[in-house]
Length: 207
Image 1 (cartoon, rainbow, N blue to C red):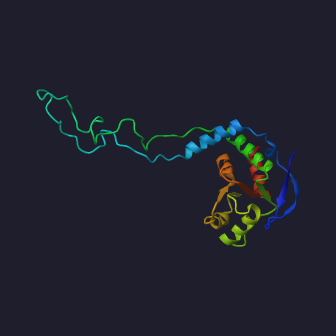
Image 2: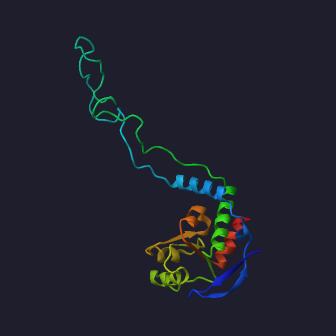
């Protein structure tokens, strides 16, 4: 079994502890990549949008009569082959990019990513993490001691609203509840920080 180093508020190691079983999960690059891409697709919000011929204004009258002009027949000046006409096969903001992610796959990928963070010395587990007040300055000082200003993902108990308030304005820092933690969050931050209480909650959910 792997061991984890526990840290205090000053960023100093206070001892070692036996790591939970999920932190011994082998690295599975294929699974992690698949789940990461699916979660990234689910976060995608299409913005680009082109109008088709039914949405372009104008074109209600036939440009010219059907026969006798010597020109090709046309029914609308908003046809896609006309200038200022509708767009064919253009990007649409109603396109759905979401993909299904199985719960077991997501859990296994998360465990694999956290184990990788531990092996890379990018997982910081504190013996206890508390705030006297929900102050950004206090939380920022604690995290800076642990990660030296690198991008940080702070994982908290879903009941600790003070950390969400304190971390709202911290640069390169995101706060996420343990029940909302995903492999996408883990891989998009250099360091992951949590305390032993949250680690226990995560282990129970993994079981």
